[in-house]
Length: 314
Image (cartoon, rainbow, N blue to C red; front, top):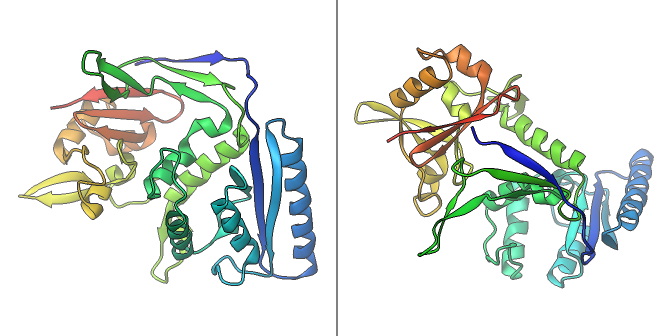
Protein backbone atom coordinates (compact mmCIF):
# COMPACT_ATOMS: atom_id res chain seq x y z
CA UNK A 1 0.00 0.00 0.00
CA UNK A 2 1.39 3.39 -1.02
CA UNK A 3 1.91 5.93 1.74
CA UNK A 4 0.86 9.57 1.69
CA UNK A 5 3.37 11.95 3.23
CA UNK A 6 2.31 15.27 4.79
CA UNK A 7 4.59 18.24 4.12
CA UNK A 8 4.21 21.58 5.95
CA UNK A 9 4.76 24.53 3.64
CA UNK A 10 5.22 28.21 4.41
CA UNK A 11 2.58 30.47 2.94
CA UNK A 12 3.75 33.02 0.38
CA UNK A 13 2.33 36.37 -0.55
CA UNK A 14 -0.50 35.91 -3.01
CA UNK A 15 -3.03 38.11 -4.76
CA UNK A 16 -6.07 38.63 -2.51
CA UNK A 17 -9.35 37.10 -3.63
CA UNK A 18 -12.46 39.20 -4.14
CA UNK A 19 -15.10 37.40 -2.10
CA UNK A 20 -18.83 38.06 -1.82
CA UNK A 21 -21.62 36.27 0.05
CA UNK A 22 -25.27 35.36 -0.49
CA UNK A 23 -27.97 34.79 2.14
CA UNK A 24 -31.74 34.34 2.07
CA UNK A 25 -34.68 33.89 4.44
CA UNK A 26 -38.03 32.48 3.34
CA UNK A 27 -40.40 34.75 5.31
CA UNK A 28 -40.55 38.25 6.77
CA UNK A 29 -41.20 37.08 10.30
CA UNK A 30 -39.37 38.99 13.01
CA UNK A 31 -37.16 36.02 13.89
CA UNK A 32 -36.11 35.52 10.26
CA UNK A 33 -35.47 39.23 9.72
CA UNK A 34 -33.18 39.13 12.76
CA UNK A 35 -31.50 36.05 11.31
CA UNK A 36 -30.96 37.82 7.98
CA UNK A 37 -29.39 40.84 9.69
CA UNK A 38 -27.12 38.54 11.67
CA UNK A 39 -26.07 36.66 8.51
CA UNK A 40 -25.22 39.87 6.66
CA UNK A 41 -23.15 41.13 9.59
CA UNK A 42 -21.40 37.76 10.06
CA UNK A 43 -20.49 37.41 6.39
CA UNK A 44 -19.23 40.99 6.28
CA UNK A 45 -16.98 40.41 9.30
CA UNK A 46 -15.84 36.97 8.13
CA UNK A 47 -14.74 38.21 4.70
CA UNK A 48 -13.29 41.52 5.94
CA UNK A 49 -11.24 39.81 8.67
CA UNK A 50 -9.79 37.15 6.36
CA UNK A 51 -6.18 38.07 5.49
CA UNK A 52 -6.39 36.84 1.91
CA UNK A 53 -9.81 38.20 0.98
CA UNK A 54 -11.20 41.53 -0.21
CA UNK A 55 -14.82 42.21 0.74
CA UNK A 56 -16.98 42.45 -2.41
CA UNK A 57 -20.45 42.76 -0.90
CA UNK A 58 -23.29 40.64 0.46
CA UNK A 59 -26.24 39.76 -1.77
CA UNK A 60 -29.50 38.87 -0.02
CA UNK A 61 -33.20 38.13 -0.49
CA UNK A 62 -35.98 38.37 2.09
CA UNK A 63 -39.33 36.60 2.11
CA UNK A 64 -38.45 34.55 -0.96
CA UNK A 65 -38.58 30.78 -1.34
CA UNK A 66 -35.61 28.84 -2.66
CA UNK A 67 -37.96 26.98 -5.01
CA UNK A 68 -38.20 29.93 -7.40
CA UNK A 69 -35.67 32.31 -8.90
CA UNK A 70 -38.38 34.81 -9.92
CA UNK A 71 -38.59 37.89 -7.72
CA UNK A 72 -35.22 37.31 -6.04
CA UNK A 73 -33.46 40.56 -6.86
CA UNK A 74 -30.47 39.70 -4.68
CA UNK A 75 -29.82 36.50 -6.63
CA UNK A 76 -30.32 38.37 -9.92
CA UNK A 77 -27.83 41.05 -8.87
CA UNK A 78 -25.33 38.39 -7.80
CA UNK A 79 -25.50 36.63 -11.17
CA UNK A 80 -25.16 39.92 -13.02
CA UNK A 81 -22.11 40.83 -10.93
CA UNK A 82 -20.62 37.41 -11.67
CA UNK A 83 -20.99 38.07 -15.40
CA UNK A 84 -19.30 41.46 -14.96
CA UNK A 85 -16.41 39.81 -13.08
CA UNK A 86 -16.87 41.83 -9.90
CA UNK A 87 -15.82 38.99 -7.58
CA UNK A 88 -13.80 35.78 -7.68
CA UNK A 89 -15.73 33.63 -5.23
CA UNK A 90 -18.99 33.67 -3.34
CA UNK A 91 -19.74 31.97 -0.04
CA UNK A 92 -23.12 30.90 1.33
CA UNK A 93 -24.45 28.76 4.16
CA UNK A 94 -25.49 25.99 1.75
CA UNK A 95 -26.54 25.45 -1.84
CA UNK A 96 -30.15 25.45 -0.61
CA UNK A 97 -29.82 29.20 0.09
CA UNK A 98 -29.33 29.70 -3.65
CA UNK A 99 -31.90 27.13 -4.78
CA UNK A 100 -33.84 24.17 -3.38
CA UNK A 101 -35.02 23.17 -6.83
CA UNK A 102 -32.84 21.11 -9.18
CA UNK A 103 -34.55 22.75 -12.15
CA UNK A 104 -33.59 26.19 -10.83
CA UNK A 105 -29.99 25.07 -10.40
CA UNK A 106 -29.98 23.86 -14.00
CA UNK A 107 -31.37 27.22 -15.09
CA UNK A 108 -28.54 28.99 -13.24
CA UNK A 109 -26.10 26.58 -14.91
CA UNK A 110 -27.61 27.52 -18.27
CA UNK A 111 -27.40 31.21 -17.41
CA UNK A 112 -23.69 30.96 -16.58
CA UNK A 113 -23.00 29.07 -19.81
CA UNK A 114 -24.96 31.54 -21.94
CA UNK A 115 -23.08 34.38 -20.23
CA UNK A 116 -19.80 32.73 -21.28
CA UNK A 117 -18.56 32.18 -17.71
CA UNK A 118 -16.04 29.37 -18.05
CA UNK A 119 -14.96 26.69 -15.63
CA UNK A 120 -11.51 26.78 -14.05
CA UNK A 121 -10.16 24.72 -16.98
CA UNK A 122 -11.61 27.13 -19.51
CA UNK A 123 -14.55 24.97 -20.60
CA UNK A 124 -17.84 26.59 -21.52
CA UNK A 125 -20.05 23.74 -20.26
CA UNK A 126 -20.64 23.18 -16.53
CA UNK A 127 -21.39 19.56 -15.66
CA UNK A 128 -22.45 17.74 -12.51
CA UNK A 129 -19.11 15.92 -12.55
CA UNK A 130 -17.20 19.22 -12.51
CA UNK A 131 -19.26 20.44 -9.55
CA UNK A 132 -18.71 17.14 -7.73
CA UNK A 133 -14.96 17.39 -8.28
CA UNK A 134 -14.98 20.96 -6.97
CA UNK A 135 -16.76 19.86 -3.80
CA UNK A 136 -14.14 17.16 -3.21
CA UNK A 137 -11.11 19.28 -4.14
CA UNK A 138 -8.82 19.79 -1.14
CA UNK A 139 -7.33 22.93 -2.75
CA UNK A 140 -10.33 24.96 -1.58
CA UNK A 141 -9.31 24.44 2.05
CA UNK A 142 -5.71 25.45 1.38
CA UNK A 143 -4.18 21.98 0.96
CA UNK A 144 -2.79 20.21 -2.07
CA UNK A 145 -2.29 16.59 -3.11
CA UNK A 146 0.86 16.30 -5.22
CA UNK A 147 1.46 13.74 -7.97
CA UNK A 148 -2.18 13.04 -8.79
CA UNK A 149 -0.85 12.29 -12.24
CA UNK A 150 2.55 11.15 -13.45
CA UNK A 151 4.50 10.96 -16.69
CA UNK A 152 4.71 7.35 -17.82
CA UNK A 153 6.52 8.00 -21.11
CA UNK A 154 8.88 10.98 -21.05
CA UNK A 155 9.72 10.64 -24.74
CA UNK A 156 6.11 11.01 -25.82
CA UNK A 157 4.95 13.04 -22.81
CA UNK A 158 2.20 10.58 -21.90
CA UNK A 159 0.67 11.29 -18.49
CA UNK A 160 -1.54 8.96 -16.48
CA UNK A 161 -3.76 9.35 -13.43
CA UNK A 162 -2.01 8.13 -10.30
CA UNK A 163 -4.23 5.51 -8.70
CA UNK A 164 -1.53 3.96 -6.57
CA UNK A 165 1.36 3.43 -8.98
CA UNK A 166 3.36 6.29 -7.42
CA UNK A 167 3.66 7.79 -3.93
CA UNK A 168 1.44 10.83 -3.45
CA UNK A 169 2.27 13.76 -1.16
CA UNK A 170 -0.32 15.75 0.78
CA UNK A 171 0.78 19.33 1.46
CA UNK A 172 -1.08 21.19 4.22
CA UNK A 173 -1.37 24.99 4.03
CA UNK A 174 0.26 25.27 0.63
CA UNK A 175 -1.83 28.34 -0.25
CA UNK A 176 -4.55 30.61 1.09
CA UNK A 177 -7.80 28.75 1.74
CA UNK A 178 -11.13 29.79 0.29
CA UNK A 179 -13.09 27.88 2.93
CA UNK A 180 -12.12 26.55 6.33
CA UNK A 181 -11.18 22.86 6.80
CA UNK A 182 -14.22 22.55 9.07
CA UNK A 183 -16.62 23.64 6.31
CA UNK A 184 -14.86 21.39 3.78
CA UNK A 185 -15.20 18.39 6.09
CA UNK A 186 -18.88 19.20 6.69
CA UNK A 187 -19.44 19.21 2.92
CA UNK A 188 -17.88 15.75 2.64
CA UNK A 189 -20.10 14.54 5.48
CA UNK A 190 -23.19 16.08 3.89
CA UNK A 191 -22.42 14.43 0.55
CA UNK A 192 -22.12 11.09 2.30
CA UNK A 193 -25.40 11.65 4.17
CA UNK A 194 -27.22 12.51 0.96
CA UNK A 195 -25.87 9.35 -0.64
CA UNK A 196 -27.74 7.45 2.09
CA UNK A 197 -31.13 8.97 1.27
CA UNK A 198 -34.01 6.77 0.11
CA UNK A 199 -37.02 8.02 -1.85
CA UNK A 200 -40.38 6.85 -0.51
CA UNK A 201 -43.51 6.10 -2.53
CA UNK A 202 -44.94 9.58 -1.85
CA UNK A 203 -41.80 11.27 -3.20
CA UNK A 204 -40.26 12.25 0.15
CA UNK A 205 -36.68 11.45 1.10
CA UNK A 206 -35.71 9.62 4.28
CA UNK A 207 -32.41 8.43 5.67
CA UNK A 208 -31.68 4.75 5.29
CA UNK A 209 -29.89 4.81 8.66
CA UNK A 210 -26.66 3.50 7.16
CA UNK A 211 -24.53 3.88 4.09
CA UNK A 212 -26.03 0.81 2.37
CA UNK A 213 -29.35 1.89 0.84
CA UNK A 214 -29.56 -0.32 -2.25
CA UNK A 215 -30.89 -3.83 -2.65
CA UNK A 216 -27.43 -4.92 -3.75
CA UNK A 217 -24.40 -4.19 -1.57
CA UNK A 218 -22.06 -3.55 -4.50
CA UNK A 219 -24.40 -0.80 -5.78
CA UNK A 220 -23.36 1.23 -2.74
CA UNK A 221 -19.67 0.44 -2.99
CA UNK A 222 -18.64 0.48 -6.67
CA UNK A 223 -17.74 4.05 -7.76
CA UNK A 224 -16.36 4.97 -11.18
CA UNK A 225 -12.86 6.38 -10.76
CA UNK A 226 -13.19 8.47 -13.91
CA UNK A 227 -16.53 10.26 -13.51
CA UNK A 228 -17.52 9.58 -9.89
CA UNK A 229 -20.79 7.88 -10.88
CA UNK A 230 -22.13 4.75 -9.23
CA UNK A 231 -22.08 1.33 -10.88
CA UNK A 232 -25.33 -0.45 -11.78
CA UNK A 233 -26.16 -4.14 -11.85
CA UNK A 234 -27.24 -5.61 -15.19
CA UNK A 235 -27.83 -9.01 -16.71
CA UNK A 236 -26.19 -9.41 -20.12
CA UNK A 237 -26.15 -12.68 -22.04
CA UNK A 238 -27.11 -14.60 -18.94
CA UNK A 239 -24.31 -13.10 -16.80
CA UNK A 240 -24.52 -10.49 -14.05
CA UNK A 241 -22.25 -7.51 -14.73
CA UNK A 242 -21.66 -4.03 -13.31
CA UNK A 243 -21.43 -0.93 -15.50
CA UNK A 244 -20.92 2.79 -14.87
CA UNK A 245 -24.30 4.53 -14.52
CA UNK A 246 -23.05 7.72 -16.19
CA UNK A 247 -21.90 5.78 -19.24
CA UNK A 248 -25.18 3.86 -19.39
CA UNK A 249 -27.29 7.03 -19.27
CA UNK A 250 -25.19 9.54 -21.22
CA UNK A 251 -23.03 7.35 -23.43
CA UNK A 252 -19.35 6.65 -23.88
CA UNK A 253 -18.53 10.30 -24.55
CA UNK A 254 -19.29 11.18 -20.90
CA UNK A 255 -17.22 8.33 -19.42
CA UNK A 256 -14.93 6.78 -21.98
CA UNK A 257 -12.70 4.43 -19.98
CA UNK A 258 -14.99 2.83 -17.38
CA UNK A 259 -14.88 -0.99 -17.59
CA UNK A 260 -17.64 -3.60 -17.38
CA UNK A 261 -17.15 -5.80 -14.31
CA UNK A 262 -18.21 -9.42 -14.04
CA UNK A 263 -20.12 -9.88 -10.77
CA UNK A 264 -18.53 -13.24 -10.01
CA UNK A 265 -15.01 -11.88 -10.60
CA UNK A 266 -15.64 -8.99 -8.20
CA UNK A 267 -16.98 -11.33 -5.53
CA UNK A 268 -14.02 -13.67 -5.87
CA UNK A 269 -11.57 -10.77 -5.59
CA UNK A 270 -13.31 -9.36 -2.50
CA UNK A 271 -13.43 -12.83 -0.96
CA UNK A 272 -9.69 -13.19 -1.43
CA UNK A 273 -8.45 -9.76 -0.33
CA UNK A 274 -11.16 -8.66 2.13
CA UNK A 275 -12.68 -11.83 3.58
CA UNK A 276 -9.47 -13.92 3.63
CA UNK A 277 -11.04 -16.67 1.59
CA UNK A 278 -14.69 -16.99 0.61
CA UNK A 279 -16.85 -13.94 -0.14
CA UNK A 280 -18.90 -12.86 2.88
CA UNK A 281 -21.25 -9.91 2.36
CA UNK A 282 -21.35 -9.05 6.07
CA UNK A 283 -17.55 -8.86 6.26
CA UNK A 284 -17.42 -6.64 3.17
CA UNK A 285 -20.16 -4.41 4.60
CA UNK A 286 -18.23 -3.95 7.85
CA UNK A 287 -14.78 -3.42 6.38
CA UNK A 288 -15.20 -1.64 3.03
CA UNK A 289 -16.20 2.01 2.65
CA UNK A 290 -16.13 2.16 -1.15
CA UNK A 291 -14.44 0.62 -4.19
CA UNK A 292 -13.05 2.96 -6.86
CA UNK A 293 -13.19 1.30 -10.28
CA UNK A 294 -10.62 1.94 -12.99
CA UNK A 295 -9.68 0.11 -16.16
CA UNK A 296 -7.95 -3.11 -15.03
CA UNK A 297 -7.74 -1.88 -11.44
CA UNK A 298 -9.91 -1.67 -8.32
CA UNK A 299 -8.97 0.46 -5.31
CA UNK A 300 -10.63 -0.86 -2.16
CA UNK A 301 -11.01 1.91 0.42
CA UNK A 302 -11.48 0.48 3.88
CA UNK A 303 -13.52 1.92 6.73
CA UNK A 304 -12.16 2.69 10.20
CA UNK A 305 -8.91 4.17 8.86
CA UNK A 306 -7.59 0.86 7.53
CA UNK A 307 -6.25 2.57 4.41
CA UNK A 308 -6.72 1.25 0.90
CA UNK A 309 -5.64 -1.65 -1.28
CA UNK A 310 -5.02 -1.79 -5.03
CA UNK A 311 -6.20 -4.89 -6.89
CA UNK A 312 -5.47 -5.47 -10.56
CA UNK A 313 -7.53 -7.65 -12.89
CA UNK A 314 -7.54 -8.61 -16.55
